[in-house]
Length: 546
RNA sequence: GCGCUCCUAGCUCAAUUGGCAGAGCAACGGACUCUUAAUCCGCAGGUUCUGGGUUCAAGUCCCAGGGGGCGCACCA
Image (cartoon, rainbow, N blue to C red; front, side):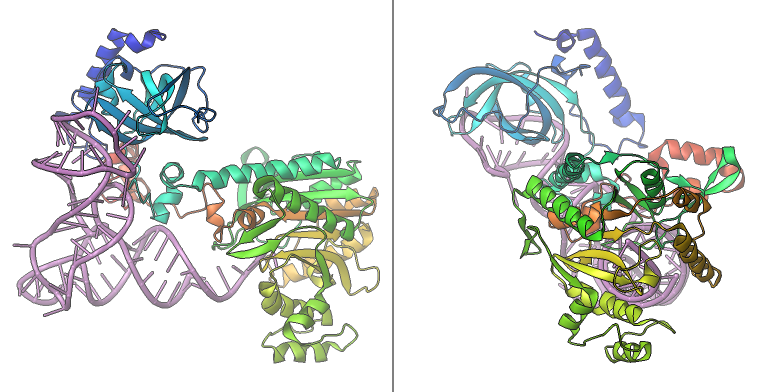
């Protein structure tokens, strides 16, 4: 036998003792009832779990290239494969099983006359991990398989994986126990593999264009760079409250001042907001800044990033989303906000009209605007409420009102607007491109205006960031910037309507436990209860308990 | 935070008007030398999310709480 551990009879004896001690009825009801029972006579050398399983090959496609084998014919080629048993069909003195790893699956074929530890193999549970060694053959019924010569257990599955045909539907189970979801439900793991490839594609595109990846602080003394309420945490060593970042923008711009002419970061932002099928308070953002570029050039970079990612995972820039075709081939249509609002609502706004007239037009469309809004703000409110959700896209929506963009340079043709482009796809903005505001005096005025809003009770208005202003005073070249929501891009490219399908562990309310409810002298008892999950009779977690 | 709605075996789901809480799969024991959601026989599995209440009787009706979903609000 190739691996000594397989036949270590002393270890086998120990294993049997542990099973009989840990799993038997006499051990008491606590803990025993929630795990699957162990077959009484399931014990052999193959069940001693080794420390390594070397030289295995991926299960997916392992039989490719053997299509020429006739039914019942062997290839003479021996391979080693490891994975999970996802189907088991013992049939007397032959047995079939499906072994699956993250690349795919392959059928195992075993015979009592040629497979070591055959009896134990037929008693494997769905979900058990095993490693096998065997010849690639075609069975009499025609399926390419691995004819198992010998095998070993790699991990026992003490819990089931749900209905083998229907998987698991309970979304709470799917998200709280994602590891189960990933195995039980076809396609879930693939979505996350695709996400990984999307992120890799983003990095590749930026790298090819000469961008440098950096990491800036997540814990910040001031949460700047966006309009949002932050999460607050406490920095013990500094005796100060800090904030989880809502955007990396201000730090990245300071790096441009410092000479990083093309710089980007992919990381988590945190915004203390509600959850929905399209929002998670913790989300992944790509921000990139390029010296000497403006918003128009940066919009082109977004097109490139999205198109490259689409090609990377779909093989094409024309994809299907929610049953509709979506053509992401650059260049994308560009339209000013005024144009797109007129096109979709049929109501023409004109930046030269009076603010009162604009407000009246907005009201006629059923959109209320804040007191004293400029024409641009009125258009923006109408756009956000009525127009954006109807844009299938992709469309670059250009030129935002200045008061909703405190970090963006004013428009070269109209001081009431800023140079900001939002590419809209499937009714949602997935990114933003800016001509960045680099004038320290103007930036200070904008910050002060934000600070006034903050004093008036707007918790999302920005604070004056003196460190950032000082950096601008050292001189920042004209620059373009982009922000791109990685979660939303992934939703579009993987055709998912719910953000939770692209987040491995989406935010969920924590389950209350006895430990949380314990009071007074219950502390030590509560600690014990946490250690022993089986003694939480009132937990509503019906998967793990009862 | 507000509204609507859901929670039954490990999983997927039933349970008539308020009248004995069930099935399939998984698990467990057994049969089977080519299975494909194998098949067959057997066995076991429940604080019906929790706590109160109404009732002769509650999975079902009422109240409170927990968690999920959707919508609104907040927000990109």
